Amino acid sequence: MEVMRYREAGEDKPTILWIARNEPGPAVPGLPISAVGSATWLDQRGPWAVFTLESIVTNAGVRGIHTRRSPYARRRTAGSCGSGRRCPLRPWGS
Image (cartoon, rainbow, N blue to C red):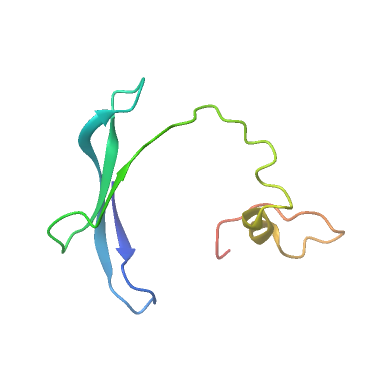
């Protein structure tokens, strides 16, 4: 995957190509992919981060993750929808 990202905080800073790769390494059990990945800025010689999966949970129950206890859900649903209703989820900044 490749994406233009800010390496430094601030919208006045330039974006730089950021490359995420699947690297050779031990396989993810039950899947035909490596458990190792990396992230590299285009203007640097090698990866600035290398990640190795230790475990994967598939079909995990997610009931209750986005509840009032979740700061993520609270930020995403904050706003005035009237009558105390929860606001529908919208993309950030909309």
